[in-house]
Amino acid sequence: MKVLLVYGNTYEFLSPPPIGISLLTKPLRDAGHEVHVLDFMKVKNTDALLAAALEKHKPDLVGFSLRNIDTQKYLDIQDFIPDYVRWVNIANRRAPTIIGGSAVMSMPEEMFEHVGATYGMVGQGDKALPMFLEELKNRTSDFQTPGVMWRDNGNVRCNNGLLNGYSDGGTIDWSVIDFKRYRKSYFNCCVITKTGCPHRCLFCDAGASFGTTWAPRKPEAILEDLRRDAREYKFNRLDYFFIDALFNEPLSWSKSLLETIIRSELKICFSVVIEPTTIDREFARLLRRAGCLMVTTLLNSMDDEILVKMRRPFTVESVNRTFELFEEERINYMPQFLMGGPGETRETITKNRSHLKRWKPLLVDAGYGLRILPKAGLRDVAIKDGVIEESTDLLKPTFYLSEELKNDREWLGKQVKELKRFRIGSLTQWADWMMRSIAIRFQ
Image 1: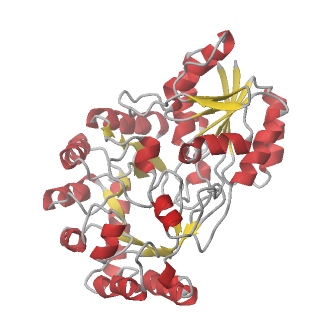
Image 2: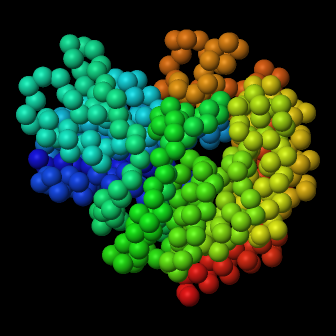
Image 3: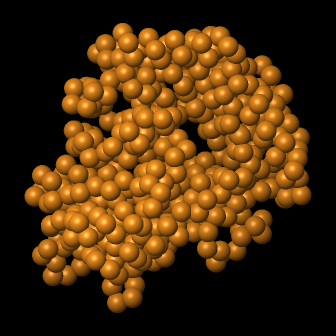
């Protein structure tokens, strides 16, 4: 079969290169399919590019990898679904279509119905998509491929998807990606370290969408990916993003991975997402020695009552302990505050600034309004509080803002600006960040 894979992400903020597409190309080619890749990042006229690619390659199937439903930012909302509907409609005129990716995982059947693709896929596609193409050629009854969605007499059918991690590795083909489009991004490259998440934070659907248990890859397999990148694509000394919902759990595994990178003497810079749960001094020291330039942590709040209501797996005390370790071990970190959830008031928000006075993060990010997702616990709370109804279409950007703050948006905007300006790092911190980055690149 001739397959055209389209990466449909046009949103540049904190966007690493499309690892999902890169995981699909090699297995499809190994199965004998002709594969072409189209990347919409930094493309001005996506419709024209898609139409030209359809005319040129004449694919038997067009696959769309869809990363974002919207920006999930109350203060800067962009809805990407109209683009997806338009692109799929253009492709449907020439060939059957299939959609997948994290945007589909959040609302599988809703996205499938609304976007109008011929097929859909949930879960990991590196093994499932080649299976589906083989089944598509010989189909005589219902599809058996894991994760596939299709229509059957007007009803949507969906098989359970694969959510068992990427233990084998070695399937990435970065040669299909134009990395010049990502050179000025916050991350130049990325590697999958672990999938899944057992936590049930109120606003998040990661566990429901990508698995409720950790599926960590073996450190040796991750190291081989990094070595392959350096050997075949000259990616050593780049800024990596470790794709992982929560890098510091399980702690023994994350330490083992950092130790493996250190022993390898491979020189990379990387950023990770952590939560202030299981962190100790050894972990902080290993982070710095392995080449970590930035740690990001989404706090929501520095008020214990709000953290409990948001079902966060940490406390203000553990946040302070984590920041203390990071500053003592010279780890640059960026706390992110997402305010306005259940129970949030002016008083609880003001606590964020008072707590931050103790610390010196390199950067601070902040916003208010929580995107309501159907697989997240916040949906039930929003229904109970009268913010939405059972029938509310959550494909449209819909946000929760506590009753106490609904009329305080001007004040909230000022709080966001003050938090972002609160700490932008000292000259010493920025000098350290720059010197470490340069040193790793040119050792």
